[in-house]
Image 1 (tube, rainbow, N blue to C red):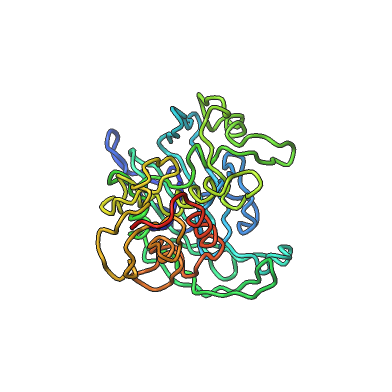
Image 2: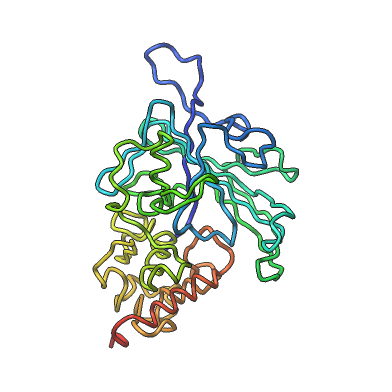
Length: 350
């Protein structure tokens, strides 16, 4: 259940001195401002006209950080949808900004942007880059080795929190974004984009909105497309739907048949129907420290006996899952999975 970075950025970044007929070399800019994604005060994250914001039904947990997501598609090119899958054209850019409000209960007090991650599609491959924001919030500089920043904030319940936020290095990003040995986006897929949004002028299905903005071509009717649950919306979605969505986004980018954790046999995709592959009464591939001497990934009716719950509820190196992308335990996410396991049919595995 490894977590990590993710997002796409595409633009013309390669040099202009290459000889005609030769592929031009690829390079990222050193400073985020050089892309021209945002107008005016860059920290306001106000996008220019061809940079489009988007949202996810269920996002990845990253130490309670908020995210502002945008996509840029080259003029004359389109995303396409087929059989519920999303395909990105050459030159697509996804832009993911991580920030904290000083006080979640009073967002007007301001926010502090930590990093911006880019995923760029070039020569049919995704490239990754991370930009760390300066303390004065005027610029962000590219960093391939990662970093740590101490952050403090007040949550919506008025509780003061702090952590040493870890900005992943390039290899960390690549390891979690791998699928079939190649880097690919994690969050922005059809099922996770299929939701209602407000544009400020109207409420509209987000996929239809992206279609209207010329971002997607050949879109099937949205009511015929898959839709992922919102993990914390208990009014609209069932407990099973919400838990499965949470596991898909936070774990399944590694835990699938072609992901980095395929050797575990634990596959946590939202669409997974095989209960054994989902971890029900399935033993771990090794009895290392991470298993906590427990026998099964998931024991129906007993979260405390389940390795999945044990690892999600830990911060210890070698035990904590996801391995990357968090320093804090997501208490609300753990509570969701605990309730889901408690409600699974059947009691015990022996």
